Length: 161
Image (tube, rainbow, N blue to C red; front, side, top):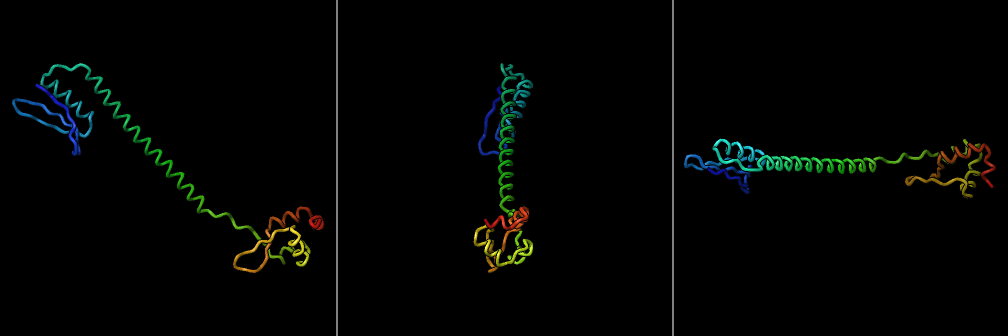
């Protein structure tokens, strides 16, 4: 009696065990190597074939190989998930726009600073404040944080020097 193990290409279950019983050849297909080797061992014991040495080692080897393959596939999936998560975070960062700066018209800023708008234009020309222009208007604006800095000193004449 002989029990053979082989791999068949192009099949959904490629692992094949073949044995001869009462002058008839039998064949069974398996999806995994481990199932095929277990069946082979059971069939050899059933048919009374002499015990091969190292069958336990072979089964352990295939089992560890199978576990290793599954761990590698899990690692690959985790890496893909991490990559997609970082890509999604980058997309979300790109989607978020920076907050629009709070701006005041020159006349409003002049009221807050308690100076004339003419003097404020003079300060703009001197470079004390920076001009902020919107693309769709011709009005000049000043950023609110600059006005707040100016108010923090409480004396606009210090900014003239």
